[in-house]
Length: 391
Image 1 (cartoon, rainbow, N blue to C red):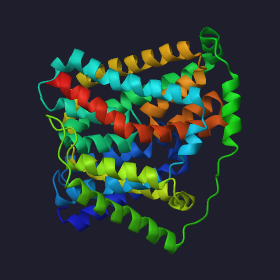
Image 2 (image 1 turned 90 degrees about the horizontal axis):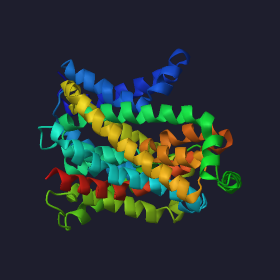
Image 3 (image 1 turned 120 degrees about the vertical axis):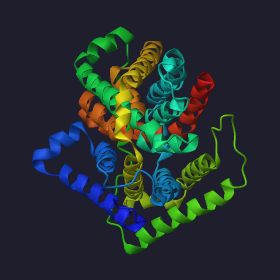
Image 4 (image 1 turned 135 degrees about the vertical axis):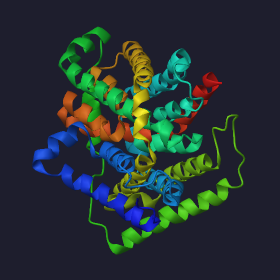
C-alpha cells in the first residue's frame, strides 16, 4: 500500500492524467461521452483503495480538501461573466431559478418522507452534499460535503445516485427534445425568446490565447494566496447552526466564492482568456481523486434506498419546473436547459441545450455557470433544511 503523501499524490495525478488521455482515444470517446471523465476520476481511485493499493486515510487527503477546493472555486468565480449571464434574459433566469427551487425543497421533502429507510444518523449529510451537485455540479457537491463534514463512506452511495438518477434524467430530457413543439403549444410559449437569447450571445467575448509563464504565476499566486487569506479570515468567524451547517471550512468556501465573484468585475477576469477556469477544474478533479480514494466500495450495497430518495427528489424538481413553465409560458428548451443547469451543471447543460437548439449550446454553458454561483448559497440552504428534517 502506498502511504507516502508525495508518492500518493503522484499516483492520483497519474490516474487523472490516464483517464483524460483515454477519453481522447477514438474507440473510447463514445464511452466517455456516456460516463464522463469526472466520474472515472472518482471511481478509479475508489477501486485502487478497495484493491489495497491506496489508503483510505492519509494526511494528503486533508491537505487536498483544505486547499484544492477553495483554489478551484476562486478561479472558477473569477472567470465568471456575470453581465453575460444577466443578458440571458428574464425568462431564462426564471427557469434556472425554478429548477434550483425544486432541488432546494425537494431535498428535505424526499428525505423527510424516506429518511426512515436509513439507520446511519449521518446519512442526511450525504444528501446535503447531493444538493450541491444538483445545484451547479461537482464543485458545489464537494463544497457542501466539506462544509457539513460528510465522510467518504456516507458520500460513496450518493455518487451512485448522482450518476444513475442525474444522468438518467439527462437521457430523458434528450428523448423529450422530439416533443418540444407539442410542449410549447401546451404552455403557449413565445418561441421568440430563443431567438433573443441567440442574438444576445453575439456580444460575448470568446477571445482566447495561450497562457504565458507570467499568467500561470499570477493565477497560482492569486488562488493560493487568496485561499490563505480566506482561511485567516474564517478563523475569526463563529460556526453557525446546530448541527453545524457553516463551519470554519464552510466560511472559507463562502469567502472565496464571494471574493471571486467580486474580482470577476475587475481586470483579473481577463485571466479566463488564458484558462483560469481550466486550472480551477484541474484542481477540482485532483481533489475528486482523493475523495474517491477515501471511499468504501461496499457502501454501494445501500444504494436502492438512496436511489428511491433521488428519484422522488428529481420528480419534485420536475414538477416545480413544469409549473413554472406553464405559469411563465416558457419553451421546453428553457425547461430542459434550466433543469440540467442545476442537476448536471456546466458540463451537461450545453449538451442538452445543443440537442434542443444546436446554435444555443452556449446558453446551457452560461446557465450552468450561473448554477455554480447560486449553488454555493442555495445548496447550503438546502443542507440546512435537510438537517432539520433529519433531527
